[in-house]
Image (cartoon, rainbow, N blue to C red; front, side, top):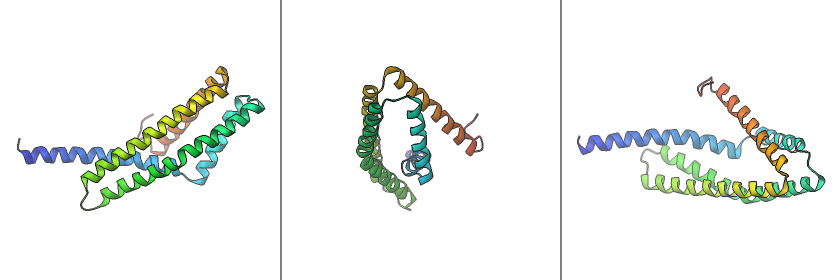
Length: 164
């Protein structure tokens, strides 16, 4: 196999992988920003889940403070991540794509996602300190059920593309 054919196959594979990533990034960017209606639905779902846990007044206050801290820690990272993903997608829209920039931006996106994941871990640890074991267990079950509903809705919205 000639070097040109090998390079072409690598380029085609790379473009395919990037295309798949862009679809994921576009979905992530929308999830971070979302519509006002989506934010309102998330807020209502959060309130519903917390109401089902039977929190004490003290726990309600602690959870409210917890949410404020979590939002403050993640806001700037989420904004930076959205900007990096937009730049990443814009770079692919150019006639001449700078691969060094693509790789550099991709690494920055991975680091930002890692930071968000670290904050999420801290958040769950903090919540475990606020909630009883049974409340935390019920909280996790509620989140799983909510995500199942979201995923099911996404599959329907894609015309069954993602399967049953």
